[in-house]
Image (tube, rainbow over all chains, first blue to last red; front, side, top):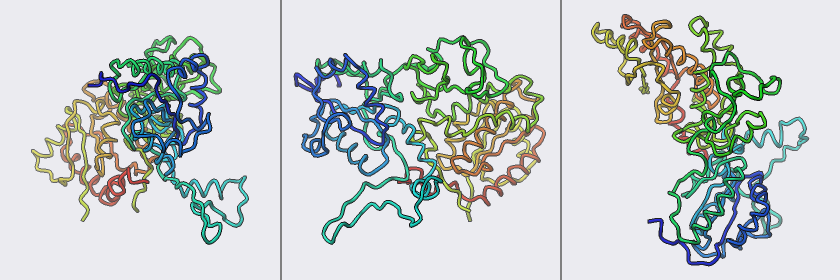
Amino acid sequence: MESKKITDKKKLKLAIGLGSTCSGCDIAILDLGVKLLELIGLADIVFWPTVFDFKYSDLKELGDKEIDITLHHGTIRTTEHEEIARILRKKSKVLIAFGSCSCFGGIPGLCNLTDKKQIFDAVYGENLSVANKENIFPEEKLLINKNKSITLPHLFDTGKTLKQLVEVDYFIPGCPPPMQLIEGLIPLMKDVLGGAQLPEKGTVFGSKKTLCDECTLKKENKMISKIVNPVTAIVDPERCLLEQGILCMGPVTRGGCEARCINVLMPCRGCMGPGPETEDQGVKMISAIASILGVKDEENLTDQQIEDLLSGIKDIVGTFYRFTLPDALLNRKVKERR
Amino acid sequence: MFEPKIIGFCCNWCAYAGADLAGINRNQYPPNIRMIRVMCSGTIEPLYVVKAFKEGADGVFIGGCHPGDCHYQSGNYKTQRRIVLLKRAISEIGLDPRRIRLEWVSAAEGQRFARIITEFTEEIRKLGPNPLKLSGVENGI
């Protein structure tokens, strides 16, 4: 039973570890403002490389299960990220995947559409702004002299989510996680301290419904005749964006962000990950958009007209799996054998 | 020789009845297809197709009623649009879009059903095994 008190301490130990990340999640935690003081009142921070001067050795010195709560943000891209994730799992009682990258792979996870060689070729060779006539590419091992060499972490071809590597207790999605979900950490910490019943393992913090459910725009008739570019469109601020032809991931995305993008008339990009009961965000969106696009007069459309209609959606994987590619069913670019 | 595994989703009213007719008429077609009967081609979520590939299918066949003949008025139109999008999505992931085939087969077209399945099996045989099965999606690292 989870109701057993997992710690006898008066004050918790909190660690915040990272993988491949933009550190926006760190900024989001700092954005707690006054509440940050309350958080620090409940927990000592034992590891947070972005904000304090912690070294990996500090982390390694901690005993097993000594950390009470760990937040991990960022995709797993290198051997270093993998090592840190495994250490954090070993040393923590509760491991929380924090932010879209850790939960579903996030933006860095789109690396799965390519591989290490292609990335290096582009970054150190083909890009127009690069002058690399000698074809110098980064090496993992550099010999300084006979006895001394330094090594860099190995970059994987495939980005992974935290869950694909170690057991994860809770998920806090969002890019970055919305403020109200981060504030939810404080009652969670109090529960851990007080020995209250903790949420079920694997719980995703956020709404139990999709974003459309909490979006306040007026929804009338979900049938669209073409896809509109949100940059050039004149948007009706009262009406559902999808009904105006703007690609909005609302129908397949978990709520809990209080429609923060839609409130400023930007369509949802799906950072909260697949909605409850949704296995794969992208194919669900393919299904959803194909069901409402071009319904009017559908019996008279020729194959070419259908192609033209759907060609308004550019870069399907990049749009529909923007934050969830490593977590998707087909999560990696493959090559047909010819 | 490589024997492709093909998953077929056929609608209850047309394609599945067409397959039945092919059986009654004793029209021969390769046994590579494993057929699943669904009530309407409109119920076939792209997820089913993707899952079939994930589990190692080499091709997915989808059979529905001819346009205008759908038992539920408009299910097949939706399938048509979904499959166009899905084909584009799987080709971005690197799978050949020819691995998905959508055909309209009526209950009277047993012979045509047998011909389509023969053609499709041969096409998949030429394409070779599903690359997801070969490398293993997780083996990227």
